[in-house]
Length: 162
Image (cartoon, rainbow, N blue to C red; front, side):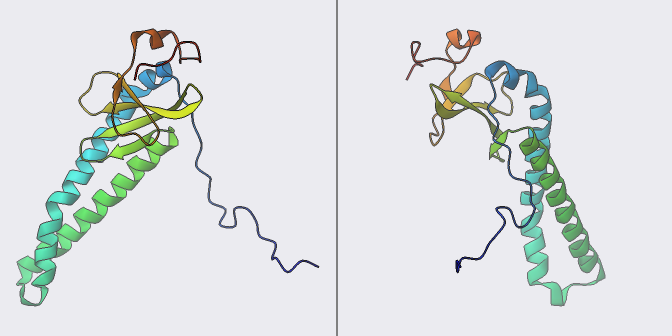
């Protein structure tokens, strides 16, 4: 008899993240929705960053606050909690689309794909009008998408520009 306990492969019953591979055409079609979600994420993060210093100051001085100071402290706590919940909801929606948040300050996201059989991503930042960059997984440098990719993902015969 084996001494190893029998465990379920997913004991918490949590949904496993979907591994999505998107083509360029699909990423571009998704862009209006993704841009709206990313804009929300950036705004929620900005709200949290702006309110946190005041929250910390009020917390440090909590024993010496008058009633209006206490009200403000509670109000800020509620505003930050609401922004954090909204951020988490928007992030979950983005992840549900298979898109990965890279930077919540500038609003950069990756649309996972494969280039020449290697994990890669099409990259987009808030303010850009279209998906025009890509990179291999693990690389931070964004490369322009070659014009010939409009016809499809590169194969072994048409190598991407480096």
